[in-house]
Length: 587
Image 1 (cartoon, one colour):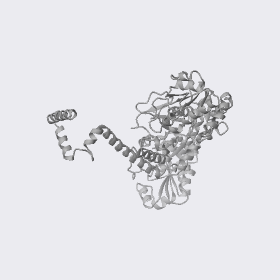
Image 2 (cartoon, helix red, strand yellow; image 1 turned 60 degrees about the vertical axis):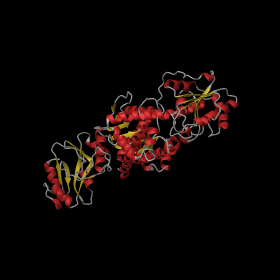
Image 3 (cartoon, one colour; image 1 turned 90 degrees about the vertical axis):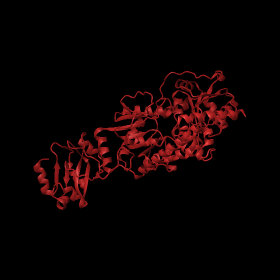
Image 4 (cartoon, one colour; image 1 turned 180 degrees about the vertical axis):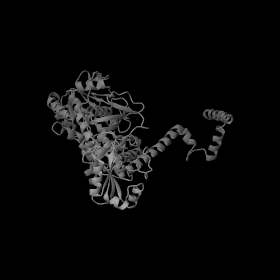
């Protein structure tokens, strides 16, 4: 716009348009600035949003049109309204202060991008919170507008939380890496992976790896693609992402006290889960079953919850080798159940099913392949049954797992509750019959038609399973066909849509309260850990001497502490105590 055109605008409307020389602007910017001012007559200035890169017209087309307010007056590309000039003019150094005194607002038109000027800042001189600490306030409307502008102008940047990567073999690790590779294949995101100091080397082309959040830039999105395990999880992610997405896998640990060391640790986990999900801007469930659970427990409102299925096409066809310990089967056919002995895996039912099949004339055995757990194990229930024709292997390697998938007569998956369930798809991919029950997510994913297990009637299930062991092709083909629809590329595309939805969501004061609750939980965990570490270090002998019920009174404890603090008296005291101990034991 020329100087003459600006003069004509001022004469015709009473407005003034200030544009820095060399600025590049969105087409139709005058009309957009006026639209952002509105018709209430309370806006003093409307400034374009300034960013160093991007196509101004694309930013305008994709803008969220938040039209945020700001406390800072800028005159790089600004429409000064007629009301402001009439009430607070002229345009001198005191103009902004006079507008403030009159209650007139300054607006940023986030659908007008200007390049070639100083970038728009979201810093509020009245806001003293440090950006590097926990989020002590919701992101302002202006901060959200700037984040979205950067997303459109520079592309989407996402940080995935990969701090759980240890062996690259667990199901969650495999899923995390499959998601990272699929997101990269889209070409629509710059991906960064946050890993721990002890993480193994991972090969991810085009993915930036970081091991320390200190000084790391904040990407638009930080995504935790599995549920929380500690109060520090989201605290750290707040340093690397402006908006938070959390994927929740299931509520088994939330509901079952037997999966925890004590009632206190169970209660702590429930507090952690509630606060963590409240702190996230968007929560993703891996199935409708999980989503319904989260809503039923009042953990996430439906408006902040989305469902994205996992992919099932991550299985790498590698070498297969038989595990040691199968000699008792003597070459007979076998069923296999893969996974730990957590109670919901329902391994006792698998044993019952085996015996019912053998009663019908089947001659095979059962292989239970998976680690034992410390809390919530079904080992006692398994031991209470006849283990004839049952082989328990413990953990197996990837190659041994592939061999079991390929050589088994069927793969059992009798879990009472699962958030998704990859095992049936992996079994079908290997050409082996999967045996499932129409419960939890399995009913949602596979339906009733091909679920041969009747919950939880081993005798009736055996009658349905036995014919299928000889004719598995129809069920294998059906599960394979369903798995072909559940690809990681599809999962990645859906996440890209959700990331943009997250950036458009308003900030919530409840998220700040949740972060504060997480900080309190972290402090509680620190002191509880310190207490138990000290208690373990003292041991039963030390505890018998000190503490509320200890044998030594406070004055005796102080005297011993004084004597042991000096080398000369410490050595003499310890010699005397050792001698007294020998005499006591001899007596």
